[in-house]
Image 1 (tube, chains in turn blue, green, purple):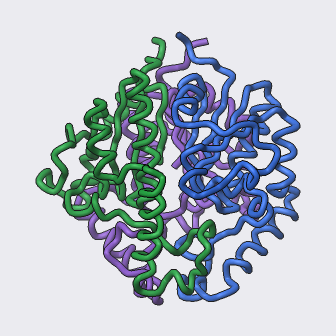
Image 2 (tube, each protein chain N blue to C red):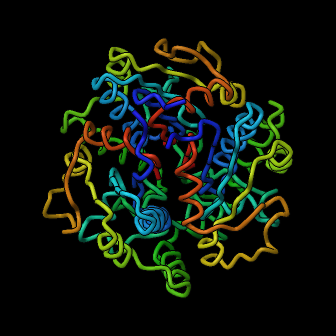
Length: 156
Length: 156
Length: 156
């Protein structure tokens, strides 16, 4: 009953660009190191594997004191787009892949993509809404089975 | 010195309706699968076990680009209530339990509820403010002991 | 191939005062209990180890329904400072250390501080911007190695 040292499971629960990047960096790195890797998309994280949204993830310019933007300004129309544009520029300049590139890299490296059944029901998302890279749609029991056999399990 | 394959510990640190649901789905499922399950409530997550708040958790309509609401609109009075109402309607339609129902289900399934001592001091919360389902109030050392013996430990 | 029962790794991804406190409480406690402890700072969490920012972490007054502040009020100029001031007052009253005090306590207890290479590149942060308590700057592969040998790994 020893845990498998080679399994990584990252739960992606946020739909923002900043919180979508760490799951891909960790799993593509772990896969390159020979580990079995899984991404479980749930709640707002479903945006990352939704056809109409994955290419358009955003940074929120408000409620994050780490950004140099006062909330009264961040709430103005156009500021989400501007903060996102600035972040994407930095991402590109640093040769960090875009989310679509990360999705392709992860699949090529053997990372498994799992969508969350309860979230799909709740949000009214159908299988046709999802990108083709998704391996399966699984419920809570299958998720718990995955998690209890993983060495690294992070909720992001 | 092998980890117990049957222990799940979820740390609930957020007081929003969306982030309160995953801990209950995971622990009630794991409990039904025969695992020992623990919920540790800390920081804003204390709202989930506070009498006056647990029935009234909310969705925030701003700072979440996954919602189709511009921040300038989401910041208006009444929008938190409206976003919450819409989410609750979806939750009910999909036969997902309410938080109060989840609390009862979790207790019936044997999930242990732990409140965080430092947070209670910090927020001025007393034992009388908590719902009766809370099993105990524990500090950081007891928490670390719980976590180091758990197979699945998630910070939500 | 059994996991080391004595290693704790906390990933700090947020730059807010409320989410900066739990990593320090957990690691200083675990260190006092004789465990090997690591803090990995990434994304907005880099603020916690950035000279010009670590003494000035803030609470966001908007997008958090746990606070008794309507978003339309929380978005006003000065409200971030006011919410932060109120929280700091409570922290001091309860004899919870400040972030600078926590940094010193953690180092004294032997907690290792790791900065994230990809984030530093992305945000344009240099080694000179970091507090002297940082032990090293490590990339994703070293991070995965740390995580796979840790008993408790939390993404905060």
